[in-house]
Length: 330
Ligand SMILES: NC(=O)c1ccc[n+]([C@@H]2O[C@H](COP(=O)([O-])OP(=O)(O)OC[C@H]3O[C@@H](n4cnc5c(N)ncnc54)[C@H](O)[C@@H]3O)[C@@H](O)[C@H]2O)c1
Image 1 (cartoon, helix red, strand yellow):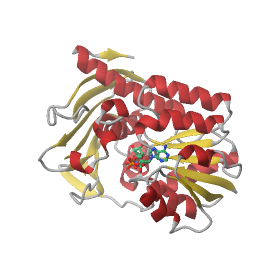
Image 2 (cartoon, rainbow, N blue to C red):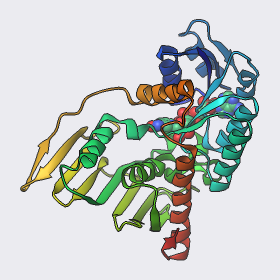
Image 3 (cartoon, rainbow, N blue to C red):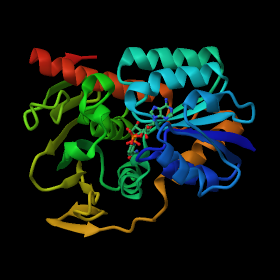
């Protein structure tokens, strides 16, 4: 049994705590959250779990071998380095860090302390995303050529913690949402990206010092291409999903978000979309189970730290392209 501590119990942390408390091969020993009310509501619902107000105190426990980091983006780097230096294996919510330099420092700390490090990119475990990739990988639609991936949603700044609205703190929709789209494209098309061209900015909320909008064109060395577009609007209509075009047909998935839209996968052929079966499972549970299995079997986690770093490398290239008005080559 591996002892686990969940660090940060804001929007997503309580769900991770539940997942860990029900997972095989691990035991939730501790949770950490500086907000007393949030801490109390999680600790009260779990037996045998100790609550701490500061994440570092949970790292001092000898019976904790694994941490699940659900802290604000600006704290990811420090918390991951602290966890590595305390000898804990690390499962860290996306993004791995808010800069490539920060990713490198975390990766080096994990290497030096011989701990496993996995950035969580839960959305690739969404059943519709997994199913779409299965269809693409099966070859039944021929060769994958290009993709159009989009996420349109409201920003709702009043409903967000202050750090999410400040780029220096890791706020903005690139680090919050954009990383999901980049992760997906790198996962499906591969890591061999040749170039990125993008426009990134905050035209919708110029008073918020963080990006709300981005459109990017990605090109791979094998000639495949994708566009990733997202906007966090003041008013509009939510839409989330991707279309993939192959030499012998199309596949598309859509994800309901904020109570809007439908979640499903369709194959497009002969001027018609046909909905396909999608086996259901819990994405967070599956992702964490695969991480635990990697620890137990002593192999690389299903999502590597190098991948988490590349997601941020592509995001930084998008920023650079937007600033210079030029394509960025890798
Ligand atoms: N995979 C997804 O779909 C998904 C969804 C939401 C959030 N996330 C990710 O999860 C992470 C957390 O996001 P969130 O929305 O839950 O943020 P949040 O701000 O709601 O939660 C972070 C919590 O950390 C606590 N905290 C800050 N400093 C602390 C410290 N020193 N010690 C203990 N607690 C401390 C804060 O009080 C806060 O409650 C981010 O990386 C985010 O991108 C992922």
